Length: 222
Image 1 (cartoon, rainbow, N blue to C red):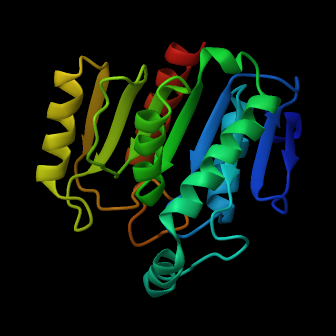
Image 2: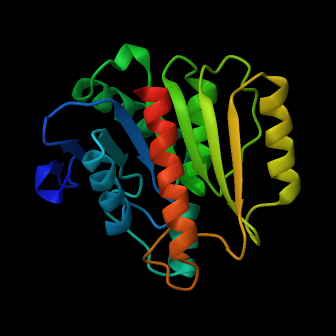
């Protein structure tokens, strides 16, 4: 499916929405990293729409974005978790009105900070999420009631994600009997998937992770 076959809704109502040319498809929530709703993440929504999904990304910073780590830290420090989680739940409701088979469940693709919130969503709204793809993110939680399958993508060297946290999450999900896939990409660091982060982006690893993501979402969402 080409870009011209994708219907887009620009930010302005608290989210970015991209739909396939058919106008319908299974729903996927995209949760950006701490940079905010940058063109990379709206572009990712477009790519998912190009694969036949309805993709929505909430704008948790309300129009603000960061280019540097220092800018991202400042934006992150102002983000109140109770407000962020409420806006994510509201975004789930919006996505539900736009996608097919909402009652069957949605997918989530989250990055770093967004990966944390993706795991939160799978944990706290167990009936909503049936497929969660997490890039370089972790979270403590009890996922026993979640009906989601999980796929994780981690960098080989990552100063932001502790190996112990990954191991703990893996153990928690295994004890909960969840379907999980864990991938670590040699020679990569945090943000390796994000093409607008030239200091970290690794094209081959990103392409492999993308193909795995699409396969996983199709398998679990149809």
